[in-house]
Length: 139
Ligand SMILES: [Zn+2]
Image: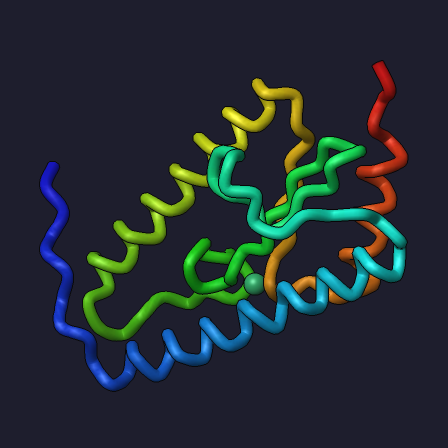
C-alpha cells in the first residue's frame, strides 16, 4: 500500500499545528513541575534511548513520554481533520505504530515505559508517576 503524498498545508491545519506545538511544550513543562515536586532526578530527551523519551528517571529506569493529543490520535481529544482526512489518519496511525515499537524496545532494555497525555491533569500525572516509581521492583 502506498501512502498519499503530503498534502498542501491549509490555513486550517497550520493554525491547528501551531496550537498543538504550543500546548505540547506546556504539557512537558507541567510534567517537569511534577517531577521536581516529587524530587525525582531526571534527564531530558536522552538520545541514546529508542524513541528519545521526553524524560528519563535514571535511577528508576523509567522512560516517560508526553504525547500530544493530536499527533498521537488521542481517543478523547482527537476528532480528525476536516481536510486531507485520509492522509492524517495514516500519519497518526504510523505514529502510534512507532510508539508501540519503541515501547517494546525500551522494555527489552529493561525500562519501564509511561505515556502521559497532553490532556492529563497534574494530579493524575503525579499519581501515575508515584505508582510507577514505587512499584518498580529492585533486582
Ligand atoms: Zn487528549
